[in-house]
Length: 462
Image 1 (cartoon, rainbow, N blue to C red):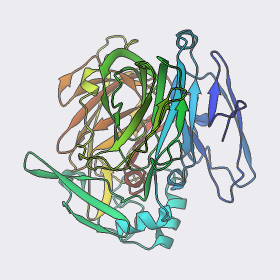
Image 2: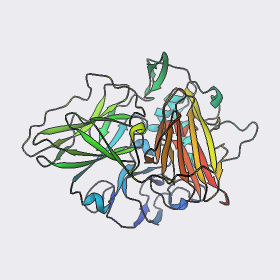
Image 3: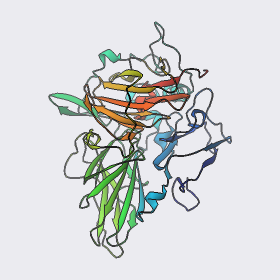
Image 4: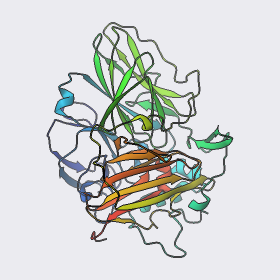
């Protein structure tokens, strides 16, 4: 997908209405989620029964006031996101444009020649045909209230791990059927990283064997808009010789944080401004956590020599963490107020059996988190599993108010990483957008095996 200027995705001018007609030209049903935007719930692009996926050749109109910043769009139907049905969604802000910086959008993906159904089959031990049927039905099912004997998720015949016993089995060093279960020791325990052994990692659809080289001015002033659109991979953004300032996360401005290396969880975005030191070629790399593998782009001034970069580095990266999160301060924080309602969610699951839960429940057999319009709501998420989970809430932007019990005046986000082995994050938001909203892990394979629930306002009919 390209906009009228030939740029990938959509770029809206300051104050421009989000007025889009979506046409499904694929052979399958699909639906597109406007990730991080705050439309009315029936325009969010999630396949509720009230807003079903589009059939082939069908169209649907969207019309709402967008919020400015770096966002993205992706399929929220089955496993289509893994097939790169994604694109940037940039909503310009007049004040940002007035800075006069060259804008560079970098979209990251993980890529496999193996079909997504087969990848998930390798993780779960089921057949690709069973996975295909599950993927087509799971997101189209209305959440059912939990009852005794109704705790099984969509993977019929799979023994699920209850959240209360969420410590998954570590399988460090094993790999099979496209699955990578690499482990990394933390305080004598082994956490799981990188579920899938991907064939390639992409930056703007290219690998480091033939990276995109972006021409920039000598001593240029650049704003990087980096989007982690990977389905199951987390990265460290490495600026190499450049020093950058993080000025926005998930589209929302923050007090600048200076550095050369920043963590970026699945579905998160970073706006980083850099001032180039004269002429030259400057790689901007995304380095896979727990690995030496990497991808990226090159910023190059006219006439500079661009040297080929290997797609593996010399050192192995640590797991992505919340080291940046605890340093972030929102430019426009939520007004101080005591919460009217606190929901606590336990994140559970494991690699064998491969299944992931919230409060011991597996989508669509979940108990919705209920709230009322006007409430100040806090959600505390505690991770009992051995993997980190990037948790995304639809329809709301939230400040991070605590990490591992430490209070913060943190960044406003739509996706936050909850680290493994009892890591915790607390978020807050005002209930000002009535509807039905998904809350889920943005690791696609965790979501598809159960790690999703619903935030529902009172009075919304189902």
